Length: 93
Image: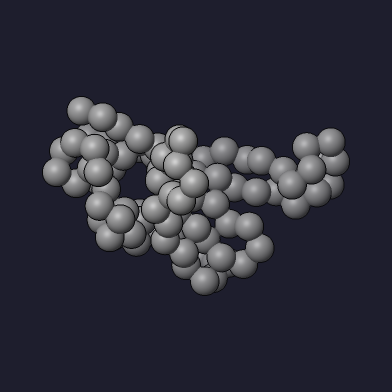
């Protein structure tokens, strides 16, 4: 079973969920035009389904904190969520 990574981030007012496709220039993406609240797990599941993906069995969302400017600890914090996904048919999409 081929798995990929889906990530979700908020950079200035909209949440964006995308499936990382290395070597591709256009990644499957869904946007929520809101800064809060964070899209629920159910909203993320539905968004992934519209893109042809599902969370891989046993996978859990994890969160990482990043910064717009890593050299400035007062710059805005960026939250990035990630989960392992697979095509909805159990294989690659």
